[in-house]
Length: 191
Ligand SMILES: [Zn+2]
Ligand SMILES: [Zn+2]
Image (cartoon, rainbow, N blue to C red; front, side):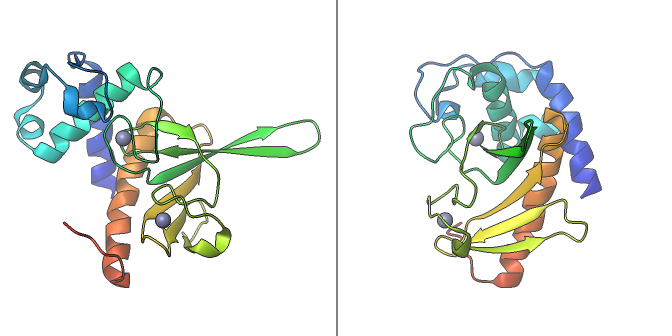
C-alpha cells in the first residue's frame, strides 16, 4: 500500500513535466483521441511508456489537467478515460447554523463531478439500502458496494488533501477493493 502510494506520487511529478496531449477530435472518452501518444511516450521513463495500463493512466492524467474544465459528462462514465468513478470526496462547508456536505465523484484519472451521496456511480441506483458498506478501523474511509451492479467505491473527506495525495490514496484504495472483490467472490468481472 505504502509503496504504491509513493509510486503514484512520483508518477504525478513526471506527469507535470510531460508534453501536453493534443486531440484529433473532441469526443468522449478523450483518451481515444490523443494524437501525440508517441511524443508523450518518448518523454516518459521506459517502465511507464511500455506498460499499457500505466501509459493509459498517465495519458488520462494529462487529459484531466488539460480538459476537465472544458468537457461535460453525458452519462455516468468518465468523459476523459471512460471508466466509472471509484471514489466519493466529501467537502464540508460550514455555514452559520449547520454544516453542508457536498459530494463529488472522482474517477481514477482525477475527473470529478458533483454527485449525490448514496447513488451508485456506475449504475445510478439510489438509496442507502442499495449498498453494503464497510468502514476502516479508524473510520476515515468508507467503502460501499452496490448490490445491483457490484460496483465498489470509497468515500473520504477531502479535508485538505492535495490532488497528488488523493491520487495516491485512490490507487491504494482500488488495490484494497480488489481484495474485497476476491474475498466476497460475488462480483462479476468480465476481464
Ligand atoms: Zn476518468
Ligand atoms: Zn450499481
